[in-house]
Length: 150
Length: 295
Image 1 (cartoon, rainbow over the protein chains, first blue to last red):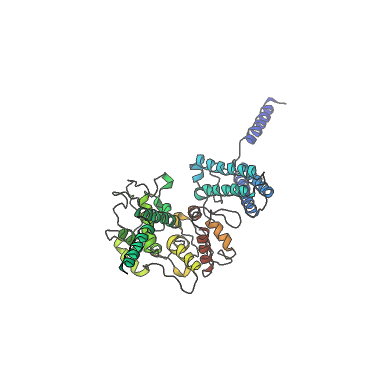
Image 2 (cartoon, chains in turn purple, blue):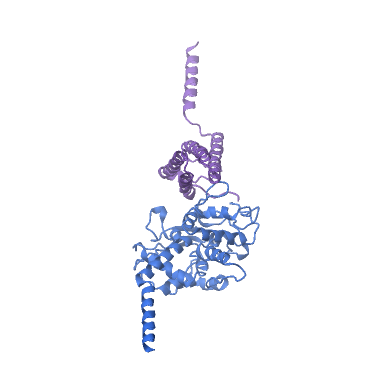
């Protein structure tokens, strides 16, 4: 193989390797992320709804685990300025420390709910569910904008 | 015969003294009642600068409206920068008439058109609670009002046109629960101040009561909470409305945000009966078809 060709191939290969390691914030990429983020939020809502109507700890544990899963995903879904047509506000990136702390509060409460609903005390599980709900306002008050259409 | 009279008068006197709570206990009762009203009315929300970690009720909270940005004043019992020198009559005048102790008119960003509906006793109790909280010497920040809405004297005309002064009068055609809900919603929690659209002069449009608006505080849009089935909350049950008021959970499992978060946290502190009364009242309102769209 000619030396120049080798160099080009090496350069191309390197670009591919490096390019895949660095996140590409193309418009299409962001749209996909925002869609997935919105679906993750909807999954959270569905779990909360399920918890409200639950009458046994096993059901509550299942929903609690769904919240844990959604919460874990959300920890890594906020690249710089990823607003698009979502309800995310610029305040998120102006206060990332506080935002992350609020998300952690939800995740901690969800972990506690899973732990408590592993037992048979429905009253305690309901209380733990209430504690999860109390964390939602932490983000929604400051970091989420109004609905675009009601 | 006289001995009987002396005996009964003495007995009555003794009972009157023992059964009347001592002054300090009466004051404690007023403060307790005042705390309840404080949560229902949400005073802390506009009078505390939580964004900049300001002290409770010490003012500085910025409220953006289409008429400019208003900074809530210090209403702690501080004698220099707060309302520490106010008498009960001053406090009642402020809420009932929208006037300062010096006779200056307040801008209706301070929702006295709602608070005017409170009873004198509720106002006195609220003052007792506020005066039981720490006095803080934070000076007031001047408002940043758009021309030509900053002239206080023009409020005389605004009040003539739009202000309906006076305490709430119970509707005899409705039961006690409905009337309690009407009082809570209109006089204390002042729902309409956010949820009702305003005309070009900033007065609430009574024919659009609670029907939502895209021009809410802080550039937020505010939902239609009339019982319209398509554009309002007509499909919600009393229990679902009560859940929103008790921590903010909506029927789909989502949670309220923006200014409503604090409202839902405050109303979680009042009684379940009172939340039910609000739900009963709200569901009884005329349904208004109004789809709120944020531009």
